[in-house]
Length: 104
Image 1 (cartoon, rainbow, N blue to C red):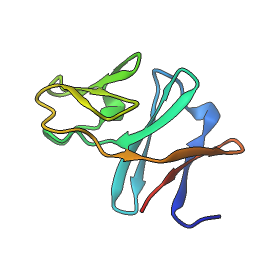
Image 2: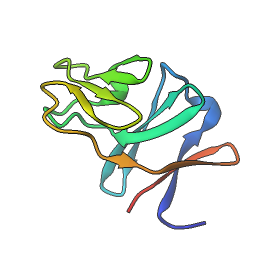
Image 3: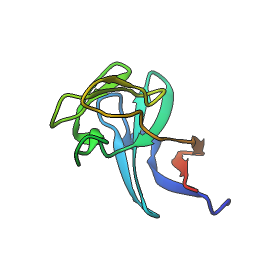
Image 4: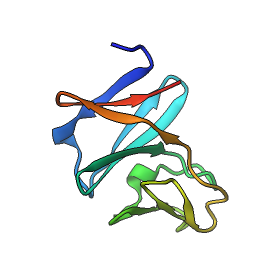
C-alpha cells in the first residue's frame, strides 16, 4: 500500500447525511458521500474552529454548525460567508470496502 493513502473507515459507515471524520498526520479531514461519490475535504471551518462533519448536510453542501458558512462538498468552494476561503480537498478512493484518503 502507498504510505500516503490512509484508511479512514468502511463504505458501510458513511451515508449522505452521516459523513465520517479522520484526524491524524497533521490533518483533520471530513469524508462526505454525495450520491454515489465520495469527497474528502478539510474538516475544520476556516472561519473558526468547528467540525464540518458535525454540520448540516443538504445535498451537495454542508453548513458550518457554528456560524452558518456554507461549502460545496464536491469542490470545497465557500458559497456563503463567513467561511473566509475555500476548503482544501483531498484525494479519496475505495480499496475494497475501505475508504482511503491521500495525505501528503
